[in-house]
Image (cartoon, rainbow, N blue to C red; front, top):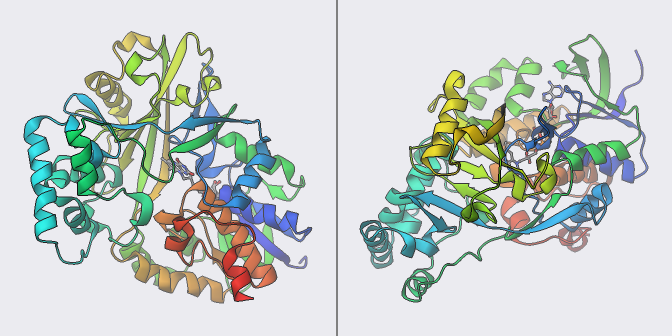
Length: 473
Ligand SMILES: Cc1cc2nc3c(=O)[nH]c(=O)nc-3n(C[C@H](O)[C@H](O)[C@H](O)COP(=O)(O)OP(=O)(O)OC[C@H]3O[C@@H](n4cnc5c(N)ncnc54)[C@H](O)[C@@H]3O)c2cc1C
């Protein structure tokens, strides 16, 4: 048998490519990467359909907390390979658009809903609720029962495909805008729309080729021959430190960086004793992405919108992106075409009828006035990501606290969106940096930051090298 590969990476999504990129940058050639599919990108890949419409696996917005990530993006696509957009997100409900964040713009609601939302805000101001034990309680305590009933509970049940009570309250951090009663009242009295919130109020998007263009470019800059596509891992022998692929090849390793879903890693290693722990803590939902390629132009109300949230039950989707607004090259001819990309969640608690889903999406697009006539649809595209969202379930952190160290004792480092299963650090920037950081740890002994301290990772933009590394040395 050949001598073991010092660094074997599994998966060519942003995490695996982050690890490979950093090793390459450090001048190392002692690594290999195995990827099941024939293309890089994982959940951040893009596809062009036969009619010439380009699709992401759900609208991918490029936002970063890291100087290192931004620099890498410029290297991959060039500084002028991008289009820059102002974030415009909206909620569609009660037959109207309400700017996001919802709670700052409740003035747009019908009077009965508005009153309910305001009374709820007053109620939590007068009598703050105890520390929440789950996400459902967190919603009620932070926004009051009115906003919870009118928007947040129906919307979150639709996105997560689980009741909010099944999610923990710890993951939220910066990801959900919280309420400022003074600001709500100010906007109400001044009849003002309040769109300027949050970390990603501007973002960039590749000029051509969708989000996947980033990761194709990254893979293309790495030495040919070290990325082995079409290499599906079928078994991992922890004791022998050996990976076997479905076509019978064997790869011995010293250290394994796995970006495969953690539940899948357990199965491939044959560690059935860990399955109950994983079942209790590692919930996930699947993402169905259904694209509608359209003839004509979007109506004026959609002309500058990025994405929209749909909490009501007159459509199956929870979010829709006007994908032709991200780049004119996402459609065959921007003068005569446009496109909508819809997302439908699925879980054991919220099954989906695949046979009728496209028809339900089209009916929903008509119900919500996204499209006016079914005859304008010139292309449909559907993709199902089995592992779509890593649910921040109640027992998640307890499970991760056992599972990740277990694998590390065997020199297996499970990282990334589903490798580490932490939704709050599972976007492209986080995932890529988890790959970069695990290499820094294994090569230079520097502590990982994104996975170890998500709140810190999300709190600010990080210089490179990380400030914490210099203060630790
Ligand atoms: C609907 C949706 C919307 C999103 N929106 C955004 C957004 O707006 N902004 C953003 O930054 N991020 C977004 N993301 C998240 C983004 O897609 C992830 O951050 C990123 O792709 C995670 O990278 P990863 O490498 O950890 O995992 P993945 O992308 O899942 O890559 C894992 C790789 O492992 C490979 N693999 C799996 N099993 C095997 C096996 N047995 N053998 C070999 N290879 C295998 C897969 O083929 C895949 O290429 C979104 C994700 C979804 C689902």
